[in-house]
Length: 75
Image (cartoon, rainbow, N blue to C red; front, side, top):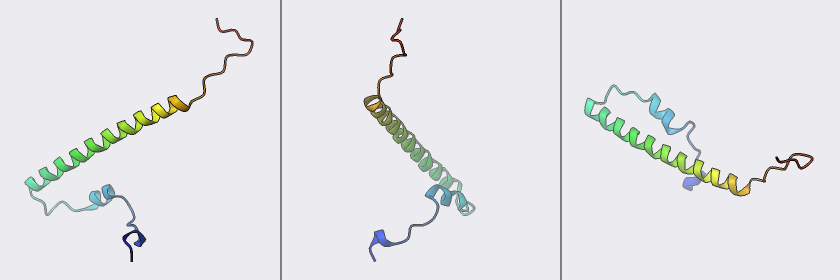
């Protein structure tokens, strides 16, 4: 069976992490996990900003100019 043929797990990884018990982790392990999650949040925020910038550029490129009002009065 090819790796792409396997059924995908339901839910995303963030949901799975939220359900995981943290009782077995030490304070140092919890600090490390917080650092990893903060780095992941920063990565996601940066990627979202890139996508928003890309979308804005595409919208500006492909948007139609506004039609002048009827009667041609622009002043």
